[in-house]
Image (cartoon, rainbow, N blue to C red):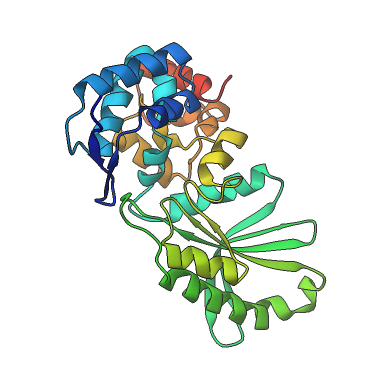
Length: 278
């Protein structure tokens, strides 16, 4: 079969790799047969230059007909993009992931460095480690963190170490600078971060600590992945700082307070339970 060139979000072209599509479907929870059937169906409809977004939409539509909760998990990457336009839901989401790993976490702090005042998106501590985290949210997949991001954040981190973190309260702590983004870093940004001893977390890096791996491991799926909620309903939940699917299961009154019909609430809860594996 002739290789078909597809267009990535960055505008670059690449060969369509059916194995990658099948793997992403399996990772979302599709059975081997479902993943294979959908991949073959998409291969039969592929056209030269088709975008990855078009392929994703086709796959999600086919997957949703078979299992909506699997389609919800498959849409994880784009569900993170849907946290916008502000970055606050993403900051709260990162805080939830860190808490799931046992950290004590605070969001949106103002602290004095040696030279100036700084806003700290995420401050997380556990067992003598202190993470000073910056969240860089993007609502489009082709927007990335370039070299300016780690350069700027590393300077802020050094100023905070000379100010706020130099007080006796933090004696004995190991300080770490982390950056979280829902898209990716340029090569220069990654290289600088590694050289400077920073932790750069993106959708698919590092290999054993990426956002994708973190969500798979903790089961903390974003509220925006649910297919049974409308865009307006998701926005209302985000405004109320509800960022996790499982938060609907522990506070079902939220949906009633939004005046959603009981029949739809039942479907939303059913999908939420399946997404969370309950």
